[in-house]
Amino acid sequence: MDHIIINEKDNVCVALKDLKKGETVEAFGGKVTLLEDVNRGHKIALKDLKKGENVIKYGSPIGHVTCDVPAGSHIHIHNLKTNLGEVLEYTYHPENAGEEMGCRKASEFMGFKRTDGSVGVRNEIWILPTVGCVNSIAAKLAENGRRKLKGSVEDVLAFAHPYGCSQMGEDQEATRTILADLIRHPNAGGVLVLGLGCENSNIGVLKGYLGGYDESRVKFLQCQDVEDEIEEGGKLIEELIEHACGFKRETCSADKLVIGLKCGGSDGLSGITANPTVGLFSDILCSMGGTTILTEVPEMFGAETMLMDRCETPELFDKTVCLINNFKEYYIENHQTIYENPSPGNKAGGISTLEDKSLGCTQKSGKAKVRGVLEYGERVKDKGLNLLSAPGNDLVAATALAAAGAQIVLFTTGRGTPFASPVPTVKISTNSALYGKKEKWIDFNCGVLTEGKDMTELSEELFAFVTEVASGKKIKSEIAGYHDLAIFKRGVTL
Image (cartoon, rainbow, N blue to C red; front, side, top):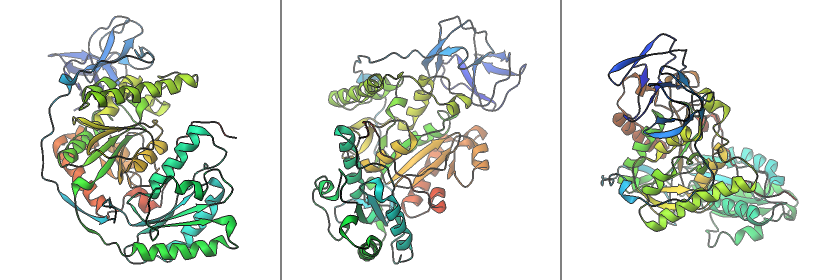
């Protein structure tokens, strides 16, 4: 198979391999001859298009052509422009929501049951700095702590970040909220909150964001208060390891899983292979009573009405409208173009407009109804598919997913990336070439779909793989020792 027409309404096809001028593709019962070379992932006009006419992909407009385009032409950023405007008004059309997900018996995995009823898929000790000034101390404590691992405790991790001081208002609140969310995360069997002492978001302030907490699981160290913070921190790490050793992997129902959905470094195959496979995965988990979270709001622009129509209630529809328009207002307030996307890497891979990217991006949500809409820093409480407010930036969005409660993040990519997040971040390639080239980055390959593999079968294999990861299988970034954290910076720095 050398090309694909995604939807019967489409007036373009997508090349599944590099095609040369003079080759033909089949469409509408006939053949279209290529007028120029077209690389894998890029679009080919299947009919003559007049200037201003919409280009249809995924059954929806992804922009309009800026000149007359004959059939067989390469359609990309040189002759295609977005249709997107600014803040819009929306109407709820729940009749367009599609079918209801059925119920499926939940499978099982081996996880760590916490005393608060949550379930972790890792049993790690996390060191969370309240301020960037103590990042190096946190890293040293983690290095020393790894030498003392025992029992079921899997790692000691320090999560560096540059914030926690010189912040104001909403920006400072977001930092405190994200840190508090991560302190409560079930993948951590124990947490050391490491402060300096003079920062805005000091330990005393941060405790107010935690509510009740288990004093055996969460320890605090303010470095200015002790003579030797490495010695004192080491003692607390040992206490946390002893506490976390009390947890063993136990049989858990898949309805306890919370999985984040994210993509980055997308290409023209993202919306054809990896993203719809993840969408089927999401539907499987939701049908078992589990939870998935879709984020990166700017990459919903152009496809947002499909998500709005899938909202279970009018109240959720209203929240989704706010989710979209608030992010657009954020762009406008900062004097930025709303549709300044896709990235150079996206464009090289065949994505031409934000609608093109968004319609592919939202494939990760499958067909389930939207059951929850979350603000940035809000923790998930509704089972099923949730939408989360966060930017498209890979590290920021993946951290936001972890803070919302995701124990694992599924990350699809056509270009490849080595980054991680506070939780296992499974890299899923859109094409087999990437999988072969970056075997130390990529965990699962959806490129086989262009080689004849059935998507339903592949989604079941992905579900089985995620169950293995939830049960302790290390993914490539964990093996490499990569663990990252990034907080959404929205305010001034003092």
